[in-house]
Length: 499
Ligand code: FAD
Ligand code: NAD
Image (tube, rainbow, N blue to C red; front, side):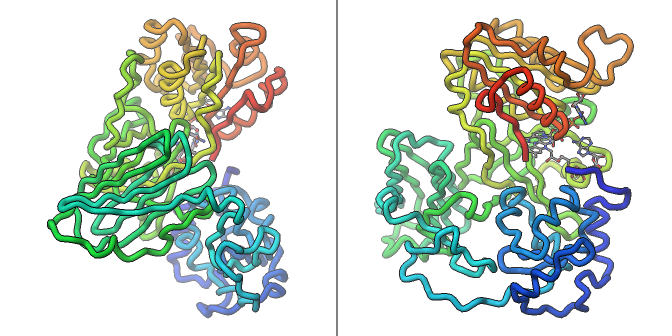
């Protein structure tokens, strides 16, 4: 993110798009754009970009782009789909840039693929993104493609997914069943398998999920509303029975009800959202979700990292998360577009919550002996589940240390709870460091620096296996990673949480 000029916030952009001004220079006409034409618009003062086959004139958006003009210019006059997906595929550009739409890419004639499994290789991918979206695995990997079946009794429908993958677990299965629409997604490393049907008959709201972990069989059990015999499971929907890269799967959202909002500090609140009854969703440690709200007519999306309802002190007991709720610790910024809207939600209001994303893998911490967590402000949020997981389930863990950077004492999140935990569990230690302390602060102060890190980031033994996780404002994370590398820690020993 780069600092934007005054008057260039997202809210200002929304205002501009609603002003009726001609942002494309085409007076509302939509045109077909050839590759040659697109390539001509590659300058800052005349910049077109193609995303998924649609071309946008992003010239007026330049100064509003949170990532800066240079980032946008990387895709000037070309297909920016891949770049966009790498950086923020969760941003709803269709809504944000709808007034900048120039038109569609002209379709180039191409030979139709013989069968779906022979879909083009990356190298041959069409510029205009008009080809079938389904990128299927090479045929050698076909045997690994999951499959599904279904059967019924008088009262139940069971959909069985054979994932052909050992070590299936609850976090890899996401089910949503609402209004006769069933969506079951299985996450398998970087791939996703989807069963998506419009059910033949109505089912009750509750859904049960059984996982045979060792053989990789997943059962989704639905209760029939009426005890009648179904002739078929239902009509397949758009992406039914596809096995594609996760990044090619559209993010799925479900509406969740706000059930409570409690103060954590003067500006940070713990929001509890209830998942719909027909949803099975467990957010993996280290991953985030996206929240979506309509703000003055425009869809806005922001990422947040689920935490636990509280910091458990007794790590013997593992069943604190009930599965039906998502807890988010969110700082409300006085001029923040999204957080202001969140803060104005009433209990009982709904917000859309996405499937989880993120590149942290539990296996990174599973072999750690020393876990060091560097958090800046709400960068504390991914550390909550991570700490819980490490202290509960990582048997080789010897030490866990949180170095928590905040501006003032009042900003420290869950300070009491952290201090209690440090008293209770001798493996855990917490260090608070303030960047803007009052005179009476006797603890450590300063910003993240080489000297602070060399004082606090240490292995418990010379050759112990260490994992250092860092999360906070972007400059904090970037500087931290650099200092750690200068101190001799390797890339594999560092995990930075970023967008
Ligand atoms: P914006 O409208 O984007 O910003 C408006 C103004 O708010 C800015 O001009 C500035 O004055 C102020 N502001 C915004 N962000 C900052 C900042 N970082 N530092 C100082 N001032 C700022 N946030 C949480 O509270 N909890 C989380 O669990 C969480 N998880 C995240 C996970 C990921 C992967 C990422 C990338 C971010 C996460 N965030 C989290 C940040 C969150 O996504 C939003 O950026 C944040 O809530 C601000 O949104 P906003 O629309 O209210 O502010
Ligand atoms: P903040 O402004 O209160 O700052 C907290 C501490 O971070 C400061 O005391 C200081 O030590 C350090 N810091 C702040 N700005 C710095 C800078 N420019 N250079 C070096 N150090 C700096 O933090 P906040 O308002 O709570 O913001 C937390 C940030 O963490 C947000 O930017 C949010 O997007 C990010 N976050 C990211 C994730 C993720 O997974 N990627 C998760 C949660 C939060």
